[in-house]
Figure 1 (cartoon, rainbow, N blue to C red):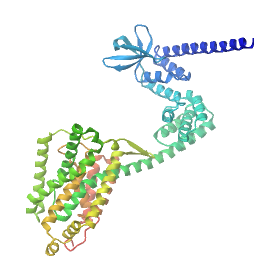
Figure 2 (tube, rainbow, N blue to C red; figure 1 turned 90 degrees about the vertical axis):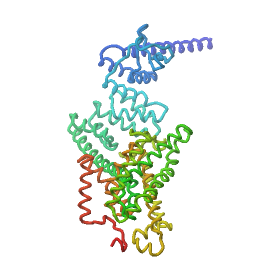
Figure 3 (cartoon, helix red, strand yellow; figure 1 turned 45 degrees about the horizontal axis):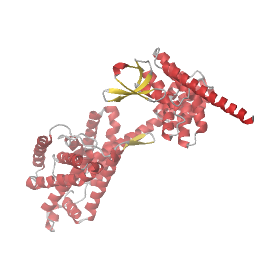
Figure 4 (cartoon, helix red, strand yellow; figure 1 turned 120 degrees about the vertical axis):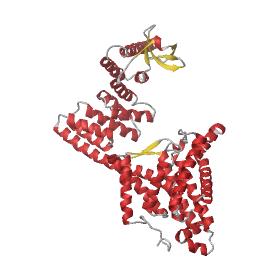
Length: 537
């Protein structure tokens, strides 16, 4: 008797579960069918109702709707998800996810949405994924709800907050809940508390929410709290924006340093106005392009090391061309700076035309290795890996050059010739050899600059022309021949340029910098840090 009663209870429970499952499936089928009919307003109501069901199958359906992949099959009016598969679409049943064959777009009717509905869908998907086992999915859902707060998601947020264990996700959920309270019909004190949470988060999304709360709130206390918080966030953003401009200026300054440091050596040591210095940068960039082309065709697995392979080759190519220029042209023009300017300007045109003849005049693609791709944030500052590596590379080149000049015989000879050429020659230093090696060193460093610039600029025959004037400005401003002056000058001009650009524009900003340098040189003709020595005195 006991076992028969127990069996009857179990059968009854199983039947209840089965009937509940059938009812749930029927309800879900009705909710999904409502997505395909009516106006955009009706579809918004259907999206909200589907999200409120909490069914785990709702998220992929809504994602397909937002992506324009939800269809009604004309043959049987079933709702399917279609994804490209050749010339046709591979179909899956929207509710069960089972494969239901393929069809052409002519056999289907797309369920259309507008931009407003896409925002509603994003918020709905966010609320559905708050309980996902994947931490990244939960954080992304909380961030999406913060950007597009939906009062209907408040219950889901409370449940997710109660169950959350990860502290970072819990904070993101708390911020999303605060944003949702500001959009909901909540008591004034709760909104004031929410305003404090949104203010502490900061950022442009927070500022937008607080400004909306300040303008839309009917309660004076909420309105005042939102206005004060918005002003606080605005001031914080202004400070972060200034810090962002400083970072942009440092990254621009590092580019100018790479382009100018070789010029500082040749100009400072030999007094040669080398207008072909930009073409040495260009040769380094094209060397990088050639290296990558060879790797793409012969050893694709080495692509991430392509820049490391290109660095010594670019130095040798540009340095070798620099030695040939010094031995073939420059050594006959010492003491005649105007003649060196004209000769190297003509040479720059020859080199540009040679590159056009070999590689063509169009831009060439130089890819970025994986370790230079992407970005990260420091507070509200966006830092790209490519710019960060270029800054570190510029500082490494600068440090290596300082060690070369201070710790090697070659550096001693170069400093001696820079400070007093006649005396250096009198004590036995072979100044012509020092001149050739110095010119080659400066050109080689310009080649290294070309490798770095290939990651942030177009590789074309005109690449070097965009940096030659800026390089001369950096050298003259910092002090001719002084490497530390070149470093300070490059970083200073880079930061000043970035602060002027938002107000004056890029072109007018450069003109203002040029005018400033002209006025500065009138006061200090030898720049910020003048070299010491008998010949320069």
